[in-house]
Image 1 (cartoon, rainbow, N blue to C red):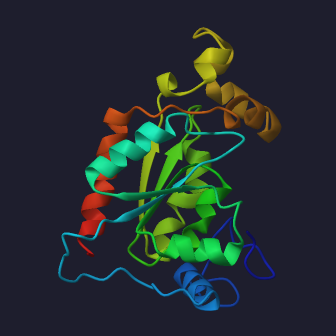
Image 2: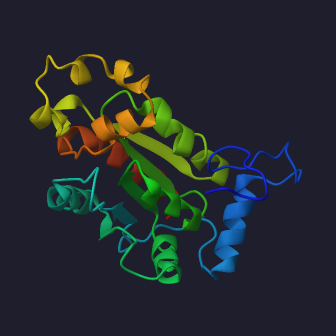
Length: 222
């Protein structure tokens, strides 16, 4: 996404560049108003035992799929979340914006689907699942640096090699497994072919800790 006539940086706004003074939180506020979304911020108020935080799980269809979606949903439900599973491509954007805005957190493997965070109310949570292959720096540029500027809580989960389908494609002694950075220096298209098409099977015991942290954060605003 390029905001304005000049790209300040990928998916962000630099308040020191023209037009001066505008921040990324100003943009997300503008988006919520443009789509007439009801929730602009999660506010602390008296807790209701009947209210469950809503979690939107972005389920990709083509690459970087979560293979154990059903088990992940069951675990999240057991933790106290109300879970919605969507990819966003099956409904008009205005309707999907309303769905996102009704949620308290969004979870997904790195990709464009997480950009729907612009519809979340402030203080909501974004959990980015980072695929294997030393992609953390690459993934941080899009979301780790941007999410806090939208006044959202950023959390991440970096998958292990055992959670990736890469092990079903390459042996452990393969150069793609042994030295990911050697692939990085070959450029984006090689990196994409090797690492961006992997699917993941989440280690639910380990991922549970990330969801618990998100639940505790959201619970402070219920």
